Length: 169
Image 1 (cartoon, rainbow, N blue to C red):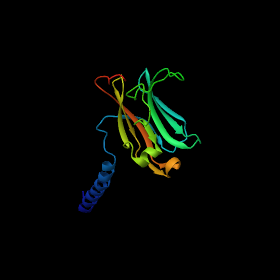
Image 2 (image 1 turned 135 degrees about the vertical axis):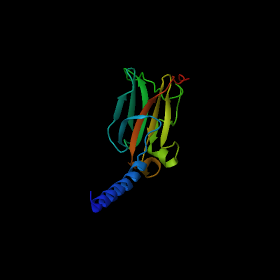
Image 3 (image 1 turned 60 degrees about the vertical axis):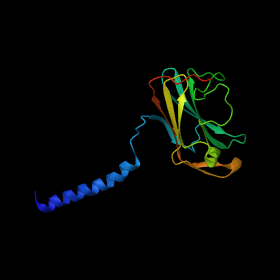
């Protein structure tokens, strides 16, 4: 092998490694071992996304609108199957009597007020699962009832735990 070829090969390898290092740093491995199963733009107009968690549970992400049909954001639920209209309970709630904002809500006005973090880990009560709900890159515009998302993604992932979370109160 000639010297010029050897030097060229070394330079090419070095440049490739320099380019690869920043890319790897931007996409770190998920050391928490969550499996992302639902991912979509926060501005999507689809009314419902769902994915089975196991044979008895389903993850659902509902599009939420206000009284004037303006897109407010999303709310996440885990429900027993089959899901029957009016008879479901969100197993992410810590209480059967909950009322008010909750970390399952990804509403634009929450981001403006930083009510909840952009990433939340939520137990599935009564079952050995946790959900991770994230909104990477989410941005809002507007104020009051006119606040809305302009960009970002909604991502929901899950992981299995060694034992079930406590049942809801």
